[in-house]
Image (cartoon, rainbow, N blue to C red; front, top):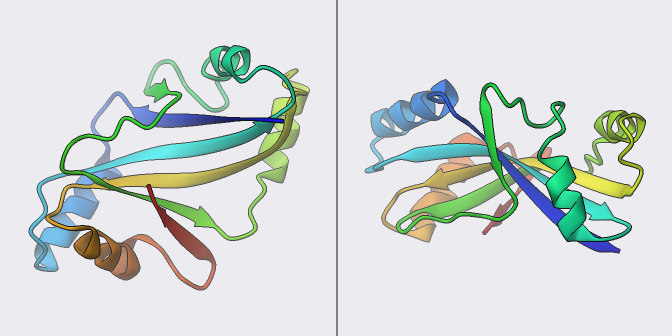
Length: 144
């Protein structure tokens, strides 16, 4: 069993990130920038390298007109990356759709939102996550 990851962002300005940035500024945080991407993790049967070539072309996940993607985390200097995932979400319906599209090698998958916060410390990034980016009742965070 191999593991593959996919990071999907927008080519156009991300209004959710912009709104998040302005909200955090109004909350009193000194923050330079906010970026957001959709994160997918796949457990696959077979060659991960071959799979990543195919998965980036699946328009259900990556719309070529508005999205860009990468297969590895491109962490910029000064960014603290926080992955927010729904607890227990195995993406059942999305997985079924991908199987119908011929991607039978996917055995399981997860989805989340990856936030890159350009702040002064990891402590501040975790504080922001707890106050604005996730709900501890049904979500979890992972610092990357």
